[in-house]
Length: 500
Image 1: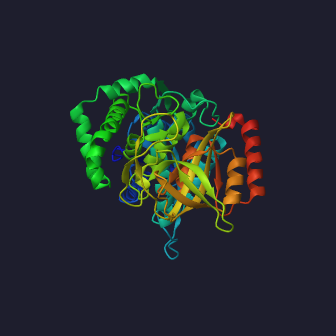
Image 2: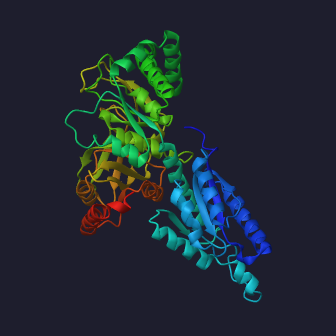
Image 3: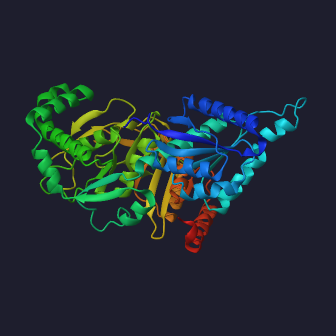
């Protein structure tokens, strides 16, 4: 993953000249103290950059314009220390394209009962200054994150860091490029979609390249490059010592695939990619090991041409940067329907990211009973128990829907004859209701599985993107879930003007 140390959240504080120079000096000092304190919070993965307080329409407009132009700025934290008449904000907010947090806090935690006077009251007006600002943003139909509480509270920090990760992913998605090696799997509905609308909505571009171009890039990899990569494989993963020499020769082509793919992605400035086992002309085998390792390096991936999941996985990689757990392309593959113990076995033919592995993966080569190509290499591993989630992005025709099911990964029984990476999980609230809700919502069979990214961060990302968000969790009741879908359908059909 790229280094996110250059990312910034701008801390912008509103006031006005009504209170005099001394009060404004105090407003500025308090705001800078809050910004610096937030900047020193280790859980917040980007810099918090204090900006001069804004007290006039021109100052607000210029600050918003500068935020738009700054490649480092991923969003703006707004705070009203005093009353800041909201009409001053109209011109600036009309042009602001960066995500916004409305931090509804105040500098002091408690009222100084014995000392409070009118000077204190004039200075500390966040309680109603924030409501004035909130009215205008609601009036202008501007989506924003609202965080309420004292700026030192753990709950405030937690909400801000969760939103910050969503803003990082949104920033990363703007003008991103997704490459499709070949086309989609034939006759499959959910992996297709409106690429133009996706670019309008999310900012990323989906580009198709013939598999022949990848095949040519594979041929251009030198023998020394491939040999060095094979040695890296053998140094990194577990394998049978008796098979070492045989592996060395068989892994050379796998190494060529990985080197060629990564060069192609870097030279084309691509952040995500897809493959398709039906479209491999000129390539001897379906990329498995290469895809797994590229995902671990931070690239998004979708199988069978699934560009939406590829882009979503890249977003998860950004949101989860620096957090334990990992994220991967995933598929609900088969069920364990034991009464009272129903579970899902998640896997794919080859492409599961080792960032979610519970231990060092095994490096193995086996036949693949689909696609009619040479035996591909893959990393085989289990996933440690613990809380996780599955997320899916679907094109519903009139909008994009982001669906999340919270799950609990559990210990998997030995699977000696299944040579793929896999994870076993309990869906919440249970398999029957989770699957019914997922199907009712039109959830895809391809997902992003994450042990690192929180539901709150994903919800924040959906709100920044202006797309529908649905959650299946321990509280889900089918009747209420069906009603939520119907209400959302009405909202997006009847209030298209609000779906900007």
